[in-house]
Amino acid sequence: GAVVSQHPSRVICKSGTSVKIECRSLDFQATTMFWYRQFPKQSLMLMATSNEGSKATYEQGVEKDKFLINHASLTLSTLTVTSAHPEDSSFYICSARDERGNTEAFFGQGTRLTVV
Amino acid sequence: AQSVAQPEDQVNVAEGNPLTVKCTYSVSGNPYLFWYVQYPNRGLQFLLKYITGDNLVKGSYGFEAEFNKSQTSFHLKKPSALVSDSALYFCAVRAGNNRKLIWGLGTSLAVNP
Image (cartoon, rainbow over all chains, first blue to last red; front, top):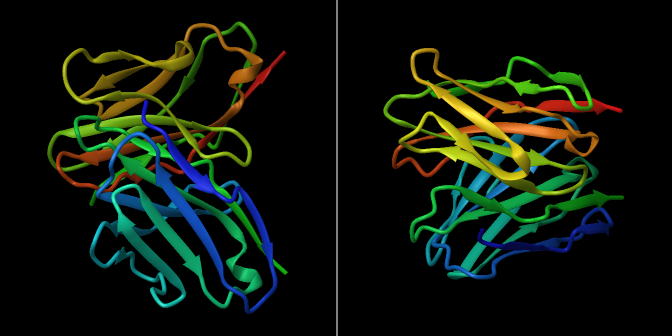
């Protein structure tokens, strides 16, 4: 299947700083990528849909100024958590679908963010 | 409204026994159904999907699932469980051309030696 790479896998940052998470489709082009947040022992919460070359579409309740998404190329989307607070600590996962024919989405390895 | 239900938070099964993880769904239009598995602190791995055709679909690691339109179910099964199958399993559905996946809450599978 298609490969999605997410980096970093783990990051610890201080309150008030910003953290950037990268999501790359390694062997296909993705016009759309998805960013999820997952709390311990809970399901995935879709945060936003990242659209190549245009603005991301945010889900209700997700602060677009806090979670900045940039999808500047067909293989890279980034999520920047700005002015991070301890409550932003979570597991963030990206996914992408190879729209040439596959119907399933492929996921990155996830990023464990800890804000101290 | 579109939704996915995984009625069991936890499933326990002895190694070597068959396992079933349940999933029911509600969507308008033809459903695209998926199962994913998640190991601790990892992203999700695709297991199998139903788009059209045979109701019984086979996927990775010996898993299979049966699409039942009348019962709107897509239960995940495996004839003989392994301890290494212990993980979190998610069912998801997409309605036709809709880009978003609707996720179940996940079922934690524990396979005991």
